Length: 233
Image (cartoon, rainbow, N blue to C red; front, side, top):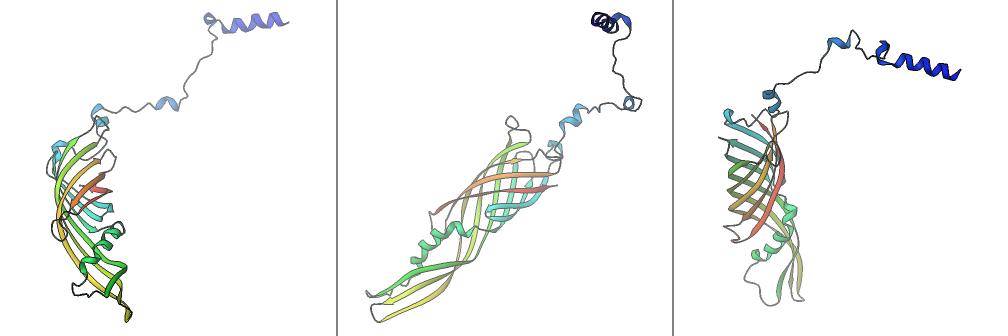
């Protein structure tokens, strides 16, 4: 009968009967427990940039303008010195290298003679940069984040081949080419941030720079920058 089945079910589920369902651990699972981590260990995820362990050194690659081998020395928590050596992103300077073509033309052309730009090829475009940086913690934004700013000096050596068309009225038309080597230097201003909250001794960084030519084309300005990774030891 339905009524009798209901009474029987309630009897087994009453708390005083001792027949309530219980969840018990198996003999195997009872030997394991949730691991506990001390507060000190929990705070240490990144194995680098502990204030008591300076100085540090870092070496890695920077991708952007320039693509470079990057070295950084951290004598203390707030100051750092960095050197980048590599190749400038020549494709970003195509318009500029075309504009300086006229500066290589001779001053002895007569009224009927003209030399017109056709194309150019950058054979090499090397860059060396040294930077002094001031760093400060930005952990309120993100754990392991540092902001930095600084000043530096950049040296550039570029070799370019230009193709041109020479015209002398109706009498002569011919194609030609010449190669020029450019060496210049100037100051840079740097802004960036570095992130190092990893389980490995690696830091990631993003930076932008403002470069000003001080030798071959005084006053010429250019924004540069890139992203990179360094192994810190």
